Length: 343
Ligand code: CP3
Image (cartoon, rainbow, N blue to C red; front, side, top):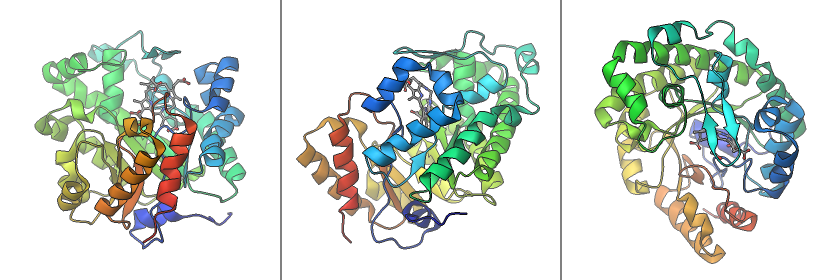
């Protein structure tokens, strides 16, 4: 195995001291990069995801062009429902749609639940190839969607501001919701373990729509499944949980088997440190829209952010994914500002 030349991310996750915080950006591979847009014109979304050479090329673009301290494999959280036999369409500019939504016990019984992790072989091939091409430059991050967020898409059938159909399903048929959440959890655990075996140095679980739940419902429909994943993966690799919007869960998450927790920009660094008692690595929480500010403002805001979190047990990142309208030199300014932070 090639030794990592830059292991800042893994050091931060282990709580070891670093000379500066590591930096990467959620959704760093993709839409705002001109070279990605060129590939998008030639191949449809799932061809890009399922062809290891293309997924590797896209994964490496932000390493070469923006200089981040970690690579995140190019894929999507919706490959899990897809592998469970649910059709997923990705329409350019419109986002994902799943024409056959989950409504009944029969729908759940019809899902493919055995050997699912084996049908995702293209993902492991992409991780393997990316690991080889990285040649130890930076660590490689694997990922999956959290059970609640995957349920949201499987029940709702498309993106939503309120996720009211997904919540209606949970509130009217809680036993079915838990069955579905458990099936997704079991598959996700096997899938993430395979990702680690294929070369992922750490894995992140994206609970992008956790914030649609009340704190009480988060504890019922999201947290137990996130924690099962963290516990199961712990012997394999450090886990980062990102329950977007669920700042109130920080205290509980600190007591889980996760090594890191992602936060969005709606909580101050001071409050996040207080709730986590400085005993879990925090990742975040730059407002992605701030990347549209003038470059000197971005640089100032980055320094303020790191000062507020403190440079240890900290991973500089955005509070959610980078948006397609961010100029590449602004993304680079964000990364450079973290890299030039001196302790
Ligand atoms: O982070 C990375 O660079 C790796 C690639 C990655 C993609 N999707 C590629 C993608 C990752 C980590 C994801 C995760 C993902 N997918 C999440 C969780 C993170 C988050 O943003 O909350 C979610 C909710 C999805 C579901 C999804 N996929 C949506 C809502 C959309 C459409 C909106 C959008 O982001 O453009 C997608 C499509 C998608 N996934 C694109 C990319 C690059 C855009 C399609 C394209 O232009 O190629």
